[in-house]
Image (cartoon, rainbow, N blue to C red; front, side, top):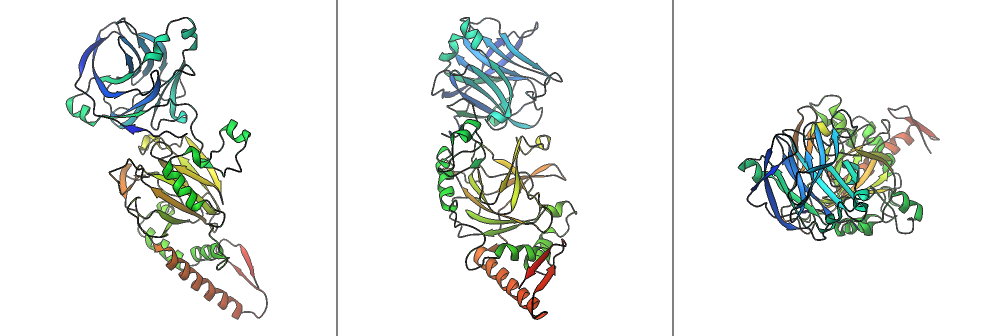
Length: 447
């Protein structure tokens, strides 16, 4: 079952400890967190830190500690027992490893440490607490067999240690999850009657029961097969939208041109249409249900979803979904991506897939339509009302207030009226079969 991360109590006043990891003694301040591990010897802890120098994350029990020591060029797993000099379990040196378990100097980052006593694994990563963002891993099963680390199962608290000033300490935000980082939930949701042993074994898809209650609520509202773009009363709605996008002076083409005014040719491709469905219920950033229209080759900026839960269902066409470690420009290479086709559903929650980009990879003239559904978690009492996004020109993180281009009923009627007028005009030009060519050169047949 999906277990959400939790922000925990403010860290306490520091105590000083000597860390003898180098020939020269290094003194770090250790900041203890009030929260205890719910299950001894397992869990995941993270700290959002804008670090300026090397620091450590520790699991502790009495005189024993298991830690990750995070530096600019060296990062290592270490243990201290009974006050002895710390022992290196494994170490990664920059330019000798393909991963990036190193300090990101001067920029906000979430650093996390996971201990998995059932599988004898220690994992360290940056960003969301998921397997895909693990940067360093150590299997301590052989040391257990040698009787060297049996005390790990008694670890019951966690701390952060470093040379932080008072202002920096106030900005450090601890996050805790009771379970270790193991296999992450996959991005695609399938119906219960579609799941099989192969999908479970390969972790290629999940069912909604494995996700948050908020995701389940949204999914159950839109997953039905009857929820589609083309409807019995307007069976060629998708064709009409495509025509409107590609035809100068038409409703969609005009709105997209208005939204892209003043933008570079490349940035114009970041424009798409947002059509709200229903009212804003006060429990989501903007309206909870939004029909989004993506022209071919158009895409969103990399953005975050206000720490909310979301369900995204493809109603027409296909698109690529890309997931990122953070909104920082340095993290602009996706760590995972998937292609979703009509009828497929993906998801996100505050702990996974929160930072993403949607891209209609199809050529111009082939739009994609999605229904986006949003809901804040029950434990979210802040209700951040914006989607933060990365401005690729300035490399700054900016705010986007979710706005609507139309309400669904108004949009549908405008497109229907425009489409009916087009068909009447086309038929009036020929008593028989009519053929027209759109801007892509694609030929459509009308009778």
